[in-house]
Length: 210
Image (tube, rainbow, N blue to C red; front, side):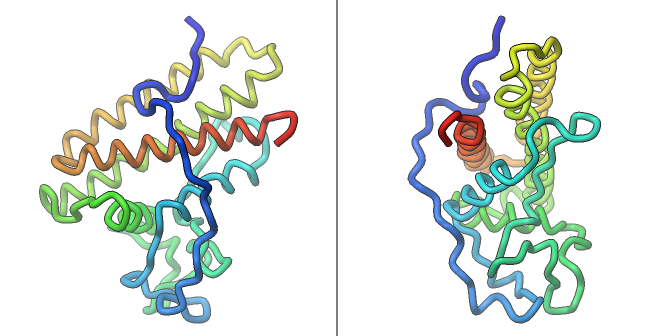
């Protein structure tokens, strides 16, 4: 059976308003340092970041079939967070428990999806975010296979590899139910929005007239 459409069990038909660049948060950032407590990540700016990640990356699967998506590259004042430090002088890319990626996704969810950072507990909320991030790479790989690898019409492995990525995404979404509790619908909506944005971004990138 040929795979069609967006990631079916994650998204239906989604309409997106145009997404803009993030406004500079002057309260949060100083030269090379950022106050993570004051960091704001709007839904529109995060989806614009996702769109830029698709447009700016090289076409096709990377080494070992990997296509990464790192939320720590979200830009603030023109610089990715991965190149900034917190107020204590520690590189954000080296943060752990939570990681830089987890902090960004928590900001998106709390500020735009009414995600409860203490629901059902602080530990489970962190595990919820840690788990959902695992869907990012197979989502990027799925759309890369669908729109870039398969467009030659001579990709014998593409359908099987697409199916494997879908299975990975399904496993991640199933695991989120163990930790997300009442946050599960909000997490699902976020994944729907991100998946829909990636789908549209890959379509535009690979259109004859982008």
